[in-house]
Amino acid sequence: MQERLFSLLFEQDDITWQSLLMQLVREEGMDPWDIDVGVLSRRYLDTVHALKGFDVRISAKVVLAAALLLRLKSVQLLEKDLVNLDQLLASTQEVSAGDFYEELEQEYGSSGAPGEVPGLVPRTPQPRKRKVSLDDLLDALRKALEVSKRRVLREIQAPLERPAKRKDISSIIRELYQRILSFLRREKRPLTFDELIPSDSRADKIATFVPLLHLSTYREGADMHGSVVLEQDEPFGQILITVPDRNA
Image (cartoon, rainbow, N blue to C red; front, top):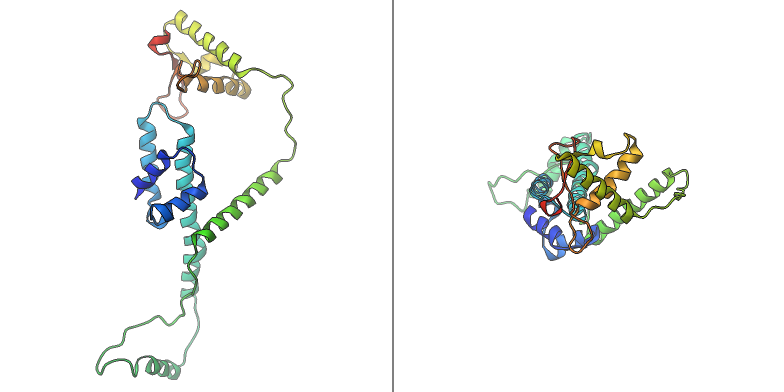
């Protein structure tokens, strides 16, 4: 089940949360309750570790699918199933002995065969709910996303100001690439990210890291993409920068 969902996410280049749920239920015949979110997440991590370069958009779709499934299961468990269980356990309705036996006689007195032991049924009435259709599910998720968007907009207080100075990202990438080549030819060793940034400020780190990602991402036919190799032995560890042999 998890493998079918994983293949669905990676085979389609453009997929939204609406089309994901529609295809899961209608075309693939899968029940979201049967999908193990933990197995799907571990499968995703194994794929990321196996790939040297990967498309961030594809990875985000796997995270989105796992998050949606986890959210749906959590809401159903916390807001529906556990509430019904609490109501069942907390029920204090008392029935007199006469009413109890009278009801048993009405239900089983004439239908059962002589000597047959009737089956037990719960005394507390179970909740009666109609089945939620796929359209109801999509509509509820859409409303939840709209509420989240409005909440984010309210939290934005000051308007964003456009920077006074504009820089061409292509020129920044070329300048950074020349700096990397000059260092590697001079020092004959890998360059660290700390050595590449002008200062330890957040602005300089971002201004250096973004064009560095462009240089490291391979795109067929794109100028300078895939020109450097980034290595990081552990999360949040030091980043080592080298160039492939063809650029040395």
